[in-house]
Amino acid sequence: MQKNNNVPTLITLFGGTGDLSQKKLLPAFFNLYRGGYLPDSFKILGVARKQLSDDEYRGFVARSVCADDDGKCDREAVDSFLGHILYQSGDTGSPESYKILSERLIAEETAIGQCANKLFYVAMSPKFYDTLLRNLADSGLTIPCSNETGWTRILIEKPFGDDTKTAQALDELLGLLFSEEQIFRIDHYLGKETIQNILTFRFSNAIFEPVWDSGHIDRVEIRLLEKDGVGERGGFYDGVGALRDVGQNHILQMLALIAMDNPTIMNAESIRRKRVEVFEKLHHMAPDELERSAIRGQYKGYREETNVDPSSKTETYFKIRAFLHGNRWDGVPFILESGKGLGEKKTEINIYFKRTKNCLCSPGSERHHENILTFRIQPDEGISILFWSKKAGLTSELEPNKLSFDYQTNDEDDGKTITTAYDRILHDAIVGDQTLFTSTQEVLASWKFITPIVDGWKDTEPYSYKRGSNGPESVH
Image 1: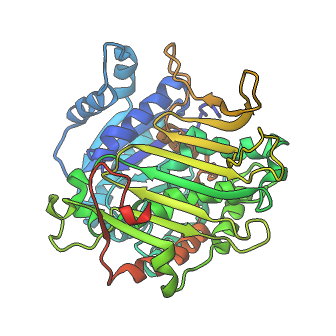
Image 2: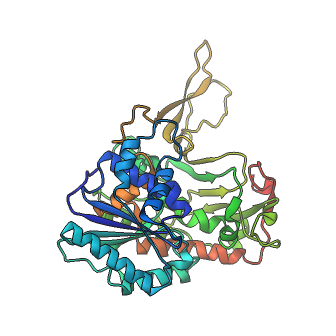
Image 3: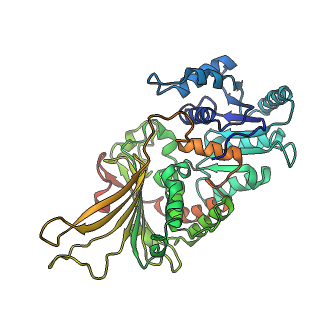
């Protein structure tokens, strides 16, 4: 992890009073500040419609970073952090607002005495992207000071489009206004510790990579399960659905890290290229394959949720059997499953290895003894391996055992440790490392796999399932 640098940096947070800023971004910036990972000279400028003074916004920021205060909130650090906070009210659809924003940033650079790096974070709904990006580019704020100093970068949240066509349109707009080196597309799952550890675990331990193929692996299950329903997100979610909400991004990114070849070099260009290769090898389903390979469901009561169409066909659950072309993964199913309103909250990747040809088991035992490697992303991050050994006693009976590794929270944390996905993402954007951000090629290749499924579902009814269950009964 790189520490701070001495180049002044101005961070503009569009949607500065929104839910994402309040719950994730502002606390993450504070964590980076406490750990010494922000530049010595920096400002965070929140931008939103609300009419607030700098001091009023600082009060909002203080409440955000101490929202979970149990008496341990470092008030001295908070007060110091607030000295770097500014606010600008404005309408992102009005060119005049960007003129005012430009004048504010120029004033800050004048006070600093040099051109500053500029980081623009778009923490707003995708429906505002087109207008915001065009106005931002027209304002001249995205032009770097020079090739040596004063870089300009933009961070945007998923979803990156609704299908292949809209994703292409968004990327064409981004490509027209910014260079690829300036664009940081965020999938916060890539910032989670266990997700980052998949590649290190695979390629730094000689016992795994030789058996990482169809000759030794029976199937891979990637599951992102949630107990809650859509809650207050009904208006947004009903036009999106589970597959586009988490399938096109989080789940496919996990699949890519499991299935990709060794990038040989630990840098953004090599790793992102290998992820693209996986997406390009995904088998695109024909319409007649959907019924048996792409199942979707909707929990009972979803249509009564706030701002949801009473006749909605939007899926809150899906289970897909995906396959990759090529010798390495030929015939190995990747089971992709996600849903809301289920019986448990869990995100994990299970890799099932094929049983040994001749199991040294007790006479008459025909049990299928599988070794299972599990990457747990939530609720408790860690890695475990299930293996079989002889049970203590006079028989040859086998029993399952686990070797496991957990990411434990250090109660003695002094603020020097990067702990959350957004901590990592924001840090990497500031230092310019694009490894944890999706490229243009990744976005388009993943949509080419997802879009035929979404299109094929348009005229079909999702299976119904009871809240608190494991999903539609017909799937299990």
